[in-house]
Length: 168
Image (spheres, rainbow, N blue to C red):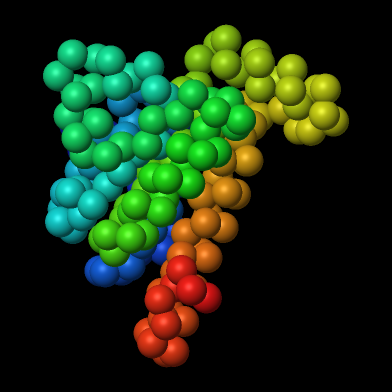
Protein backbone atom coordinates (compact mmCIF):
# COMPACT_ATOMS: atom_id res chain seq x y z
CA UNK A 1 0.00 0.00 0.00
CA UNK A 2 1.28 3.45 -0.97
CA UNK A 3 -0.67 6.49 0.21
CA UNK A 4 -3.66 4.18 0.75
CA UNK A 5 -3.55 2.87 -2.82
CA UNK A 6 -2.84 -0.71 -3.79
CA UNK A 7 0.16 -0.88 -6.14
CA UNK A 8 0.62 -3.91 -8.39
CA UNK A 9 4.02 -4.39 -10.02
CA UNK A 10 4.15 -6.98 -12.81
CA UNK A 11 6.88 -8.20 -15.12
CA UNK A 12 10.44 -9.24 -14.51
CA UNK A 13 12.04 -8.30 -11.22
CA UNK A 14 14.94 -5.88 -10.96
CA UNK A 15 18.26 -7.69 -11.18
CA UNK A 16 21.11 -5.95 -9.32
CA UNK A 17 23.72 -4.65 -11.74
CA UNK A 18 21.58 -5.04 -14.88
CA UNK A 19 20.08 -2.31 -17.03
CA UNK A 20 16.31 -2.22 -17.25
CA UNK A 21 13.72 -0.46 -19.34
CA UNK A 22 10.68 0.13 -17.18
CA UNK A 23 7.42 0.56 -19.05
CA UNK A 24 4.48 2.18 -17.29
CA UNK A 25 1.05 3.28 -18.32
CA UNK A 26 0.61 6.97 -17.65
CA UNK A 27 -2.79 7.19 -15.96
CA UNK A 28 -2.08 10.35 -13.94
CA UNK A 29 0.54 13.06 -13.73
CA UNK A 30 1.87 11.60 -10.49
CA UNK A 31 1.96 7.86 -11.22
CA UNK A 32 5.76 7.78 -11.47
CA UNK A 33 5.86 8.53 -7.74
CA UNK A 34 4.44 5.07 -7.07
CA UNK A 35 7.34 3.54 -8.96
CA UNK A 36 9.75 5.67 -6.93
CA UNK A 37 8.48 3.95 -3.77
CA UNK A 38 9.18 0.55 -5.32
CA UNK A 39 12.65 1.57 -6.52
CA UNK A 40 13.45 3.19 -3.17
CA UNK A 41 12.55 -0.03 -1.39
CA UNK A 42 15.09 -1.95 -3.48
CA UNK A 43 17.73 0.84 -3.44
CA UNK A 44 17.45 1.50 -7.18
CA UNK A 45 16.07 5.03 -7.04
CA UNK A 46 19.45 6.65 -7.71
CA UNK A 47 19.74 4.63 -10.93
CA UNK A 48 16.37 5.67 -12.33
CA UNK A 49 16.18 7.98 -15.31
CA UNK A 50 12.86 9.11 -16.70
CA UNK A 51 12.13 9.89 -20.32
CA UNK A 52 9.87 12.94 -20.21
CA UNK A 53 8.76 15.97 -22.20
CA UNK A 54 11.30 18.76 -22.43
CA UNK A 55 8.99 21.47 -21.10
CA UNK A 56 9.34 19.92 -17.62
CA UNK A 57 13.00 20.90 -17.37
CA UNK A 58 11.97 24.54 -16.96
CA UNK A 59 10.06 23.89 -13.70
CA UNK A 60 11.88 25.87 -10.99
CA UNK A 61 13.88 23.58 -8.70
CA UNK A 62 12.49 20.27 -9.94
CA UNK A 63 13.52 20.89 -13.54
CA UNK A 64 17.07 21.68 -12.50
CA UNK A 65 17.20 18.55 -10.30
CA UNK A 66 15.93 16.38 -13.16
CA UNK A 67 18.60 17.82 -15.49
CA UNK A 68 21.33 17.15 -12.92
CA UNK A 69 20.01 13.58 -12.55
CA UNK A 70 20.43 13.13 -16.34
CA UNK A 71 16.77 12.51 -17.10
CA UNK A 72 16.07 12.20 -20.84
CA UNK A 73 14.09 15.20 -22.08
CA UNK A 74 12.35 14.83 -25.42
CA UNK A 75 10.50 17.13 -27.81
CA UNK A 76 8.16 14.32 -28.92
CA UNK A 77 9.20 14.85 -32.53
CA UNK A 78 11.36 11.96 -33.71
CA UNK A 79 13.44 14.11 -36.06
CA UNK A 80 14.50 16.23 -33.05
CA UNK A 81 14.74 13.42 -30.51
CA UNK A 82 16.69 10.68 -32.30
CA UNK A 83 20.15 12.26 -31.98
CA UNK A 84 19.47 13.28 -28.36
CA UNK A 85 18.42 9.70 -27.53
CA UNK A 86 21.60 8.40 -29.19
CA UNK A 87 23.81 10.73 -27.15
CA UNK A 88 22.07 10.01 -23.85
CA UNK A 89 21.98 6.24 -24.32
CA UNK A 90 25.61 6.18 -25.42
CA UNK A 91 26.50 8.18 -22.31
CA UNK A 92 24.61 5.76 -20.04
CA UNK A 93 26.32 2.80 -21.70
CA UNK A 94 29.77 4.40 -21.53
CA UNK A 95 29.57 5.04 -17.79
CA UNK A 96 28.39 1.45 -17.28
CA UNK A 97 25.85 2.30 -14.62
CA UNK A 98 23.00 -0.22 -14.33
CA UNK A 99 20.46 2.21 -15.77
CA UNK A 100 16.77 1.95 -14.89
CA UNK A 101 15.09 3.89 -17.73
CA UNK A 102 11.40 4.68 -17.22
CA UNK A 103 9.37 5.14 -20.39
CA UNK A 104 5.72 5.98 -20.76
CA UNK A 105 4.93 4.52 -24.21
CA UNK A 106 1.62 6.38 -24.34
CA UNK A 107 3.57 9.64 -24.38
CA UNK A 108 1.26 11.50 -22.02
CA UNK A 109 -1.19 10.99 -19.20
CA UNK A 110 -4.79 9.83 -19.63
CA UNK A 111 -7.27 12.70 -19.94
CA UNK A 112 -10.51 13.16 -21.86
CA UNK A 113 -8.59 15.08 -24.55
CA UNK A 114 -5.77 12.54 -24.94
CA UNK A 115 -8.27 9.66 -24.95
CA UNK A 116 -10.20 11.37 -27.78
CA UNK A 117 -6.97 11.78 -29.78
CA UNK A 118 -6.06 8.14 -29.14
CA UNK A 119 -9.51 7.03 -30.31
CA UNK A 120 -9.15 9.14 -33.48
CA UNK A 121 -5.79 7.47 -34.14
CA UNK A 122 -7.37 4.04 -33.59
CA UNK A 123 -10.25 4.79 -35.93
CA UNK A 124 -7.94 6.17 -38.64
CA UNK A 125 -5.69 3.09 -38.44
CA UNK A 126 -8.34 0.40 -37.98
CA UNK A 127 -7.27 -0.35 -34.42
CA UNK A 128 -9.24 -1.18 -31.31
CA UNK A 129 -10.22 1.76 -29.08
CA UNK A 130 -8.94 1.42 -25.52
CA UNK A 131 -10.89 2.30 -22.41
CA UNK A 132 -8.20 2.75 -19.74
CA UNK A 133 -5.00 3.40 -21.70
CA UNK A 134 -3.87 5.31 -24.79
CA UNK A 135 -2.35 3.88 -27.94
CA UNK A 136 1.42 3.69 -27.43
CA UNK A 137 4.00 5.56 -29.44
CA UNK A 138 6.45 2.93 -30.54
CA UNK A 139 9.26 4.65 -32.48
CA UNK A 140 11.24 5.93 -29.49
CA UNK A 141 10.59 2.83 -27.41
CA UNK A 142 11.82 0.51 -30.18
CA UNK A 143 14.89 2.67 -30.71
CA UNK A 144 15.76 2.68 -26.99
CA UNK A 145 15.43 -1.09 -26.63
CA UNK A 146 17.47 -1.80 -29.77
CA UNK A 147 20.20 0.70 -28.81
CA UNK A 148 20.54 -0.71 -25.30
CA UNK A 149 20.55 -4.27 -26.65
CA UNK A 150 23.37 -3.38 -29.07
CA UNK A 151 25.38 -1.78 -26.27
CA UNK A 152 24.83 -4.78 -24.00
CA UNK A 153 25.96 -7.18 -26.74
CA UNK A 154 29.02 -5.02 -27.43
CA UNK A 155 30.01 -5.19 -23.75
CA UNK A 156 29.55 -8.98 -23.75
CA UNK A 157 31.70 -9.23 -26.87
CA UNK A 158 34.37 -7.08 -25.24
CA UNK A 159 34.41 -9.31 -22.17
CA UNK A 160 34.83 -12.45 -24.28
CA UNK A 161 37.19 -11.07 -26.95
CA UNK A 162 39.03 -8.36 -25.06
CA UNK A 163 38.33 -5.82 -27.85
CA UNK A 164 36.97 -2.32 -27.36
CA UNK A 165 33.21 -2.36 -28.24
CA UNK A 166 33.72 0.65 -30.54
CA UNK A 167 36.24 -1.34 -32.61
CA UNK A 168 33.79 -4.21 -33.16
